[in-house]
Image (tube, helix red, strand yellow):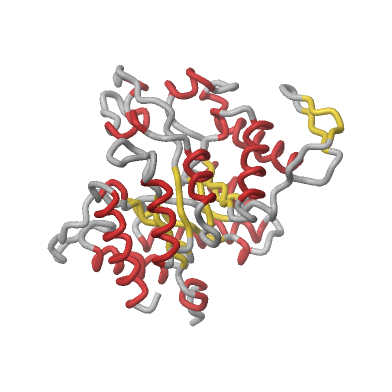
Length: 319
């Protein structure tokens, strides 16, 4: 039986950047970015959250679940692209990913230009991790389209970005926007890889049609392998090379305290147990994992120590 790609080429390992008031954001983003690159991480990540509603009733709850409170950290989240720009300025090798950025909250032309500028400034290191979004409040506050059209907004951005990132003269037109033939620069330094979040049929079908890969979180390793195989099979049916569809897995952790091995849920426990989960994801065919360590540390020192320990443990496992 063929070994998974992650086993043949080595697991790529990433970590998220500080973005909340648990950290001194005037210095900790750049300090941690430098440290993570020196440790040997392959990628750095930032997420998008623009507000936290006071009212969490009905559709205003977290993920649209009535009454479900939003994490306090979401009320103190720095802009994803500003955070990645800070990291880009003090690093030279690590890739810079968004997980996730929500195109529906942005004007598509301006977002495409911003991503192109960051990719150029970083020497071709951007990974565009995108999602359709779920917050009614965020869409009502800033989105050009209503939340009911969030899927259409994502597709619209992918269409518009493909034009803007392509050769000049650039032209684009749909029922909402018109870009007359123009020179639009800078162009990305490389073809920006597009990774799409989501696990419903529509989201998975979009990945199969036009994504470079899948960006899941919280899915057990075995299920990840099954879904990834399904995406690749669908891509093949559409005439794409299924080997071109890869997976970056967001491994979310809130604590690095050891938990009993008996009945342990995936993605819980100390660094050794998290490394076991990374190995299981590799066996499932995942070739890139990034771990959200910032919620499991209190301050920059703890974060760097946790990042060093995790990287050492994962690499010691032969991944």
